[in-house]
Length: 100
Image (cartoon, rainbow, N blue to C red):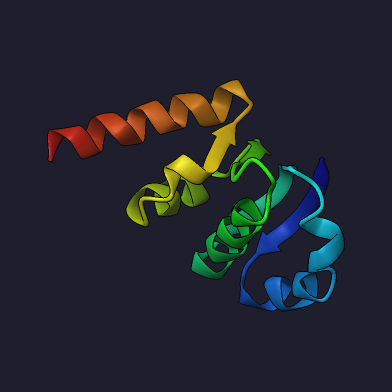
């Protein structure tokens, strides 16, 4: 599992892109130390998921802002949340989406 930290934004994605071959060889991302994620970060995670042999990226401790963007972009099927916190956030987001 690849451990990321700091902000997952356009600037950091540009740096991560240089190591994408190594990063994309893992089917998991630990985002415990990630403080925020913007749309560039979600796009990076989406590409990573699409490059996984299973087509799904296992994510631990997805920040709340990223969970909201994943739901907004409807990319949930590409991710498996392996921690209780992200799963409960996903349930809350799904309930609010269903209410609309």
